[in-house]
Image (tube, rainbow, N blue to C red; front, side, top):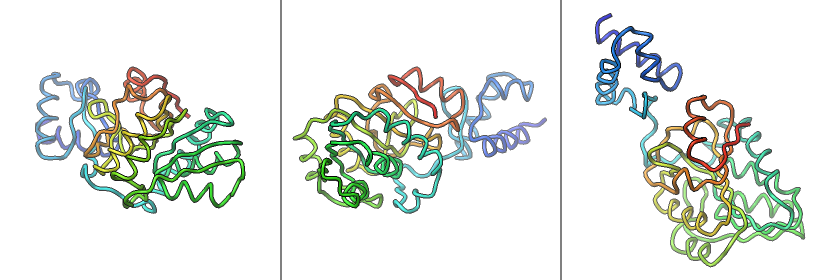
Length: 255
């Protein structure tokens, strides 16, 4: 097989499976490790793949592209429900819990309605509305205020100042992307600053991220993978990615 044919086949494999490993490509094409790495380098220069440790992945969206809340709401809802169902089991009655903005955390908020005596701190209008609509008298919601983003997060100096004045037992953090080299990321610079304040305010940090967030990189890093005490994801994540994440986060839960 000529090099152009081999590279086109590699692109096809990445499109089909989302990622490829160097070792698998060496066996498939019967060429050297160095040849495959040169192929991946060439394809990466053409923006056809993204090189990662040990292989390559499908190119993601631009790092500053921020989808709106409604656009994200219908994507992977079954996975989000499963992730939320496990996350709610980690919350004790009477806890003070911070919840960041996002569709997965919004899904979790609906399940948290059943947990008594919660104090909820959030920078998400959507999350706050979930608790407000149910109106449980034993639950208190603190909405940070701030500048509204396309994903309905409240961010900026007002939000950061509000969060920095608080201490919470637990943070439920939704993210735009996660990768070995960039950690947990977001496409919004001000949202990253607000989320970093939430991370600093929490004694325990739980990240909720479905498999589609793997190797997606936003422009700004919120936290390192090692900052997550627990990462809850779904079984759509490849075994290789699970191994990589398990080596860095405190505890990996796959639902």
